[in-house]
Image 1: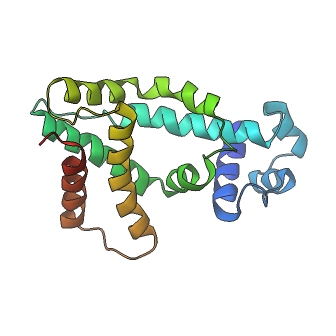
Image 2: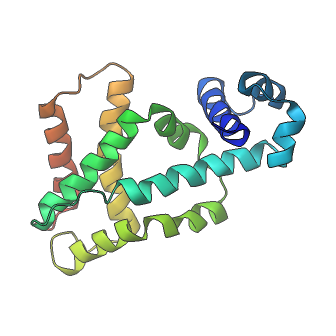
Length: 185
């Protein structure tokens, strides 16, 4: 892992663990095993590192969510997208916590939030297809997507708090609830 990557990963770990404002650049440098000046060689400030993390996670979404879609009915594809999302966050708890607690205004600007939408164009197109073909409710695209995400993240939050054990039944129930929330009746 190169120095820039170590800085990014260290910042991710620290801000998730102790918060943005409680994470000084000197600590990032020490734990990334680089000089403070090295951080400023790659980034102008802490905000730029946070924005880089945010972009990286959103780029991952664009690839991961649409992976391995079956040549099957829309609902099965929908479940695959949801399961991909679930598995990404369960497998990347730091990314989950970052997006839940750090990647919010005012730390992440509306402009940056808008700019990363290009990474999830395929996901948006998938939901639009569902609306157009009558599988999903005729609602605002963003609302449908966030409602779906909300069902999944609720289960992940319960897992994080040790309030629920993740079993195949729980995963299947989560996918079913997500589908029920957005499907056209």
